[in-house]
Every structure is written in structure tokens, then in C-alpha cells.
Image: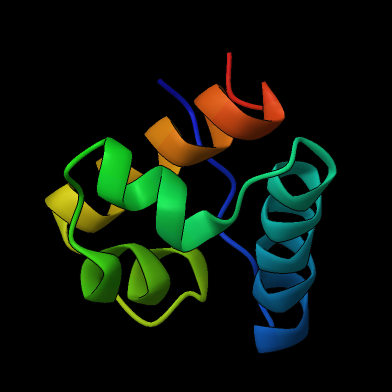
Length: 73
């Protein structure tokens, strides 16, 4: 599983906004999706916004991007 690490907070924020926009377009929200998947909201937000780079955070970010944006191969 590959995942892109960015150099700026703006890039992480843009990706985070893409995730939110995709879910809103589907009639949901990131918080609803995380609750349905039984995922910690705090860890997910830190992972998506580039504030946490531990194994779990990177794996969670990859999962979210894969399942929502179909971005990770």
C-alpha cells in the first residue's frame, strides 16, 4: 500500500477537503462515515491533516483515501 506524504499543511488540507466533499456529495459526512466504520475521529483527523505519522495513522489515512477517494493503489 503506497501513500503520498506531502511537504505542506495546505496539501494535506486540500486532500482532507476532497474527502469531505466526496462524502457530502454522497449525502453523508466524514464524521458519519467514521462512526459507521467505528474509527476514532481524533486519529482520523490527525492522520488526514498530516499531524500524525505513526503506523496506525498512515494505515488509517491510506484506508480512508482508498475507500472514499479510490486514490491509493
